[in-house]
Image (cartoon, rainbow, N blue to C red; front, side, top):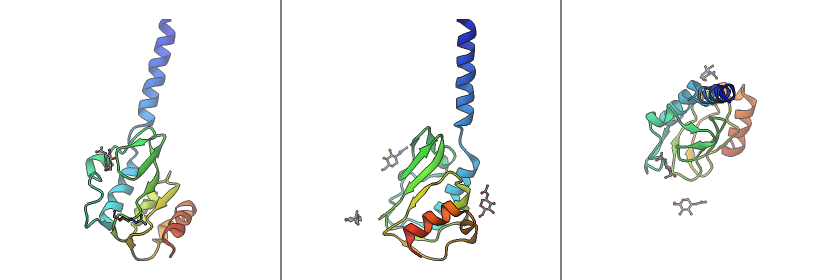
Length: 130
Ligand SMILES: *[C@@H]1O[C@H](CO)[C@@H](O)[C@H](O)[C@H]1NC(C)=O
Ligand SMILES: *[C@@H]1O[C@H](CO)[C@@H](O)[C@H](O)[C@H]1NC(C)=O
Ligand SMILES: *[C@@H]1O[C@H](CO)[C@@H](O)[C@H](O)[C@H]1NC(C)=O
């Protein structure tokens, strides 16, 4: 019983440490929010303090984000009157599988660093259509 409980505790600690905020996701979100402007303040809770810990398992505190295993997995940011460009640091969201920025005013080329990340480039190309 005692041994069993100690194993559970170790498993819980391991779980906590593996679901801690990912520095790559934090960098990705910080740069993405800097490269986008949000004139209607639709992304009210896209703040640096949430970027430092955006995921709780599969739940995200960030509007439009979905997480998987504590990592950013999907960003659904369509029709939010966003302007600007896509930061090359989006490639730092290495678990990102889907990015939806449809019906915004995103301009500019797909950053070269994303083109070398085939999953992200495919996602971006599909959604924005350039
Ligand atoms: C962030 O905003 C979204 C949409 O308004 C909301 O569903 C979510 O609960 C907010 N999260 C926090 C942590 O305030
Ligand atoms: C986009 O958002 C506006 C304002 O919230 C809404 O009126 C419109 O129906 C939305 N368009 C689409 C395609 O979802
Ligand atoms: C993060 O993005 C920058 C800019 O694109 C890139 O130079 C760097 O290699 C990326 N790091 C990771 C871990 O993807």
